[in-house]
Length: 299
Image (cartoon, rainbow, N blue to C red; front, side, top):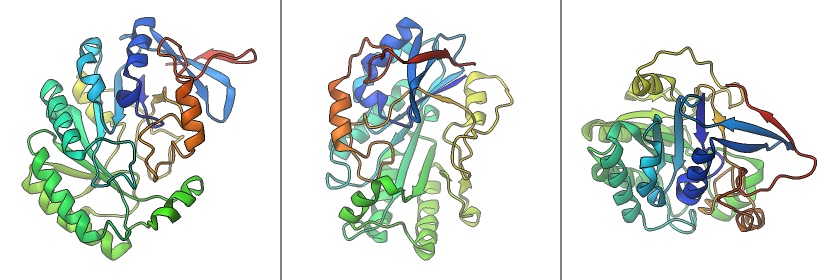
C-alpha cells in the first residue's frame, strides 16, 4: 500500500507530531470527505506500507523526526514557487525554504526530494517573463539537491473562483505555455534536472518534457527494489498518471492558505479545524462521533 500524506494538507509542515503518533499507534483514521461518517482505518506498520509520499511546502518541523521513518520507504513532493504573501500567505521567506530543501536533500538524498514548481499562474505581478527569471534562479539554487522538477499550470475550480478573481489570475495560454516549456527545458537540462508535467494533457515532448506521476510507481519500485504491478488511481483526474494510494489527510486543514489551492479553500473551516487539532487523536483535526462507522482499509 502507498500512503499519500497528503494531497489534502501539508502534514510535514503542520502535523508531523500527529504523523509520528500515528506511526507509534500503527494506524490512522481518515474520514471520507464525501461521506463524513464513513471512516477508514489505515494500517501504517512497515509491513503494510510500501511507501509514504509526503507533500509539503515547508517541512522544516519534520527534519528532526526523519529517524522515525527508518523502517519505511518515503520521498517528498516539495513545492517551491515564486509567489509572495498575496498568493501564499502562510509561508516563510522562500530563501529560507530553499535552505530547508537543501537540508532535507542532504539527509535523504536528491532522488527522494522532488521539486514542484506549480501551479503556474499569470497576473499583473507574475508575468511569463517573471516566471522565466524565477525558475532560472531557483533551479540554479537547487542544482545538485534534486533530480527532478514537476510543473503544472493553474487549474480552475469553482470553490476557488473568488480567490482567483481577487488575484486576477489566469492560466497561461498556449503560446505562453510553449514559451515557458522551452525556457524551463533549457534551464532544467543545464542544472541536471529532469522536467515533467503534472496532470496536464498538453504534449510538451518536443521540449524534452514528459508526463509525470506524483505517486510514481516506477520511482517507488526503484526505491524499494521491488517490481509491483500498480493500477492507475481511478479516483484522480483523467490526465493524472498516479498509481493507487491511500490519502490520510483532511481538507481545509492547511495553514499555508494558498489562494489557488483546491484542498484548503475556506478560511473559516481552516481555523475551526486547526482549533480541533489533537496530535494524539487518530483522526486529523477531528474526533470520532457517535454515528461514525469505521472500516479497515484493504491493502
